Image (cartoon, rainbow, N blue to C red):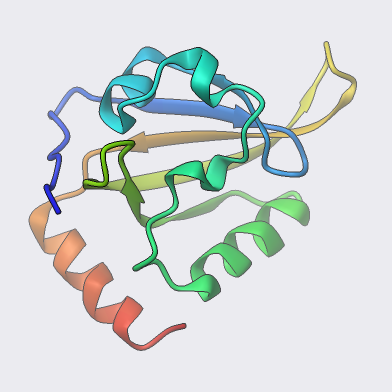
Length: 127
């Protein structure tokens, strides 16, 4: 499995509806994940979920944002070609004025090697 290491200025952004369906993805997200925008929009965000990620991390994410709080954490995602990449994610619950519903905005940046190592160790204790 090939690792894609984010560039320092990569900033991945996506927006989902309340069920986790992708409404928007920026160019950095598409490029890093290896998808075209039209392959992502309308699909569940877990299209990029890596099997190494513990379910507990996403349980925490959804419980946090559904209670109108901001969630942050480290996420290992899968690329379209089967590789992977790590991000430090911040997920914001927002009310989309156009859609007239709550949506979630995820902004992701490159984590440090130390942050990734710590996340790997933590995730070994979760499932």
